[in-house]
Structure formats: structure tokens, C-alpha cells
Image (cartoon, rainbow, N blue to C red):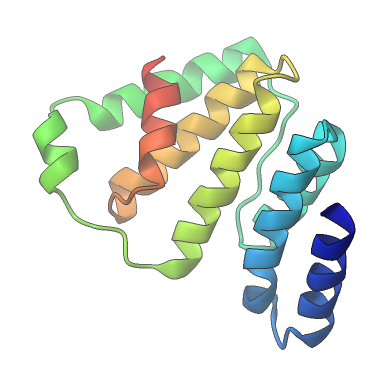
Length: 148
């Protein structure tokens, strides 16, 4: 029931003591927006949350910038095997894990919105954060989209 969910989210947001207390609620809210085809609203909210998490991302990306980002990510991954990812350093920073969750949600919105360059840039950002700070379950989606 959407109405019940919205009232629970309202209580959560009213009682949250800090931004981090709201993250689970934002995640549910955005997933709900996506499920009812409100991708534009979801995209705006995701970008706001990412900025609050310290991650600035643009959805207005040209071919050249996307190509350069893919090339940069490729060079970062050169020499790494699947085993390196599986057995490598684990991401423990909770803020970065939340960042990856919201970057992945942004990918869910960018694909149907026909924004392939922004989708590429977002997936590359997930991969780069994972290589730099360790891998986690939220790294998988970015790696998958990058590989695609």
C-alpha cells in the first residue's frame, strides 16, 4: 500500500536525527518512484542524495567525456583479474557503500531514460570507487554495466 509506505516514510524523515538516518527511507522512496514510472523525480532525488554524500555527478554527458571515462577506467582495471576482485580488499566505509547503492539506482533510471553516456559515466564511477576503496556487493552492478 503506497499510502501506508508514504506515512511510514514521513515518520522516518520527521524523526531522523541526521542525514544518514534518512538513507534507508530515501532508498525505499526512490525504488517506489521508479516502480511507478517517476524516473525524472527519482533522478533528481538521487542526484541530491549523492551530492549530500559528497559525490557530484552530471547526467549531461557528451560522447567524448564518456569515452575518456571508459578509457580511464579500463587503464585502472588493466592487469586485474576476476580473482583480484573476488579476493581483493573489501569496502568497509558505510558512506561509500551508500554512495554505490545510489549510483546503482541512478543507473536504473538512466538506462530507460536513454542516457547512455551518463549511464557509462555512472558505472565507471562505481568501478573506480570500488578499485580505490575496496569491493562490495554493490560493486557488482557497476562492474556489470561497465563490462556491457
